[in-house]
Image 1 (cartoon, rainbow, N blue to C red):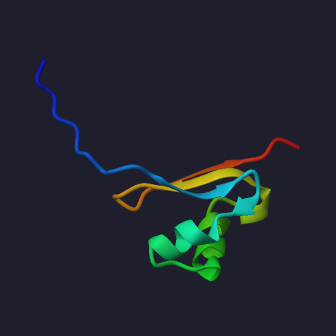
Image 2 (image 1 turned 180 degrees about the horizontal axis):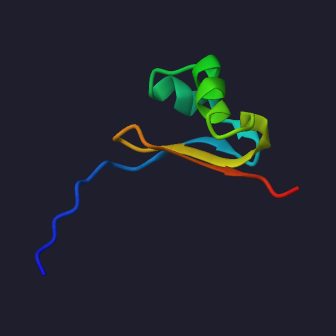
Image 3 (image 1 turned 60 degrees about the vertical axis):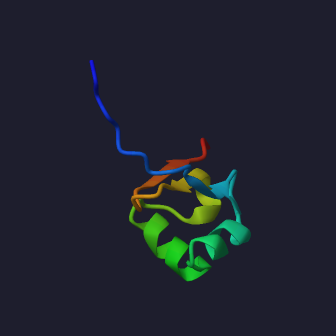
Amino acid sequence: MQIQADYTGLPYDLVVDGVILKDNLEKIGKNINWLEKEVAKFGYKPEEALVVTLNGKGDMFCQKKES
């Protein structure tokens, strides 16, 4: 099998265990307001997230913390 996957680079961690990683937001040219709007699309706030990542294609992954 010669399947080629598109390389999108390493994802950026934007939130880990409810902590916003401001340095990584700056690296991708975004701010906290942008992050709050994007995470709200998943139905919660960044502080409620276990993890939020963004890959090179602009795809966001969010997982909410367990209550």
